[in-house]
Length: 331
Ligand code: HEM
Figure (cartoon, rainbow, N blue to C red):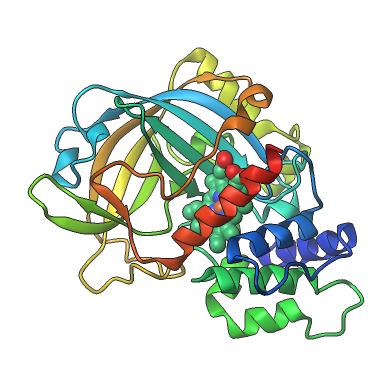
């Protein structure tokens, strides 16, 4: 299997060829805007398309809370009747027609969920297939994207990307992790990565991170098979499964111990931390993605009462960047 690092380096090179511009955005622009500028420079500008996670597939679903989920949080969807969902699965990267196994995706997939709450408000969860992030801040993410953009084939070694990775061990570990392509989006586990604060009706607060586990088990294909499959097999295979019946995931929260870092998404918490079962996500119907996806905006800060953002700085930077990308793609 090719290492993710070599895939990431190849992605960096092809991205550079695709986009001559590497240094964009004045220093005084908000960080979220500079991040979107840099994503547009790396992947090219595609009108009406997300700056990141450009390729997606939208589904309808239902969330059914588990008994006792409200022990963690008083959020309205954790008790009582099922909640309708809109779910967008995606591949990372800003190239809308990239194959599922394209290096520009970095091997990362997304699952964004919108809970339509009874009072008309919304709760969003925006998760990826990796259980950590390569960097701890938006500033470092911008530096990483700039280093990728500046590391073309003719650039002398060590390239800016190599230099960045040598001084950022978590980023080096992230790009060195093999990330096979799943059989379908329905066989891929997803992770919230950033910590959120959950408060129950008694006022007890705990920090936790989402985990979304496919009930049929995680299942992947080999690199060889991924290269031979149709370009959108992750979505095609999920649509085919959903036609036969609901495809289900368990929604869990991994609860932090007192000294686990809640403001650094590069730090994975130990696996023995307890998890609380929030309930079951059933993916029930494929929607017409092209018709609906541009009106959808998932924000990590779109939260129900009983769930708050932690002080992880990436959360607010994400919201700033997503809003900027949304305004560009809906112009
Ligand atoms: C500073 C860090 C990050 C930046 C700048 C960033 C940027 C972006 C942007 C610009 C979009 C397109 C939004 C839109 O047009 O609606 C996006 C989408 C997305 N991001 Fe991030 N992101 C970051 C971190 C993360 C993290 C930590 C996760 C998950 C844990 C994540 C998961 C996703 C997903 C799943 C989507 C697709 C949402 C959809 O389907 O509409 N991102 N990101």
